[in-house]
Image 1 (cartoon, rainbow, N blue to C red):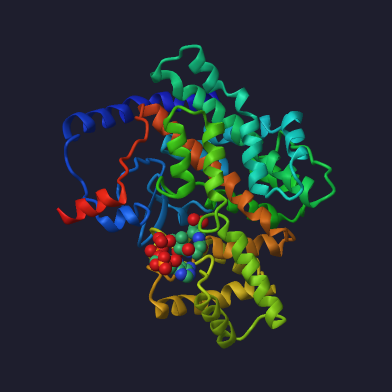
Image 2: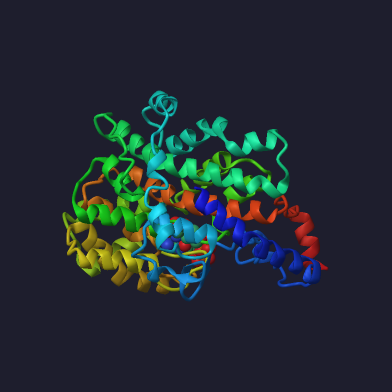
Length: 424
Ligand code: CMX
């Protein structure tokens, strides 16, 4: 980890200087106004969160450190983590050291496995993941450093140490959840010499197929970060801004990811697809699927996997997964239904006229790929998302520790105060 610490120490002065100068010289400049609709509508679109790791535009989608995600689909997740935290791609020497950054310390302590084993059999896999992270909080180097009186300038170092420990273990924790809840409970030990995603794919114990390894790698890359305003990142950042350590913060962020309008949508999509498959005893005609979607909308439910708070085009992460399905000739019913949905849902949502974006997001396809390789337990899908998203939340918190951000504290209004402000 020293090589990342050194790299961050190298970039730190310039980042701090940029932020301090901006604050000093332009702190009073107004960059946006806020409408009543935005206050009522989930703060949608208010530019108010600082996030250097990635950005999401309406017309293109995700860029990590200003590189379009479609140009990063061949990377390993460790390389993506390096890019997220340092702002540049690793050189050859750094890439060699990154290879086992997480796997070398991947073993999950026995007490964490015991916590998972004592949870109720009906606990959702996301509740198990979040609990396991919280259970490790007492090991936080950040908490220790803070209690020992480390100054604000130095706290990022312990945040990096915590982040690497959390990420090293999270794949083993996720695999343990999968094997305890859905398989025979026998855990597969990590190989300290394998890279992070290969290890994760192995520990799940689903397949040794090279394409499965490739899918898990791609999955961890595509879900890693999605700027700072989404529910999971924003929650993690808010908790972290109180100088809570990353075990508290990532656990909290994942609790937000577990909602059906956010990361749980991938579970909802598979549920929907299997419902369709069962209802029609296979893949329906486009006409029949169109009617099925209208019936769902008319009963007041959303079409999961479609629409987005920021994106107004097809999510490039959907495109990357779609390409994976094509490249690997995946043609089972669930993939065929995903493709049929892509043909018809944008038209249906446009005709309905409510959703600001009728296009698919990443969740509309990710689960079907996992399903195709034999991971049929779809309540686990958001855990796969969460393992990857932990990288983004940790990186964003690390950035804020590096520049010494303030505690998050927006102002709330009562409904009457809002009415009064609107009528001024
Ligand atoms: N199906 C049906 N209606 C939809 C819709 C969809 N897929 N997407 C949006 N709408 C509706 C909204 O429910 C809202 O209706 P009301 O005015 O009755 O409340 C209206 O269209 C306007 O919403 P919007 O401004 O377009 O979307 P929001 O920014 O409020 O919400 C999101 C974004 C993602 C929550 C919404 O598109 C949605 O519910 N999609 C389905 C769930 C989903 O796929 N979530 C995953 C997103 C990606 C992720 O975070 O993982």
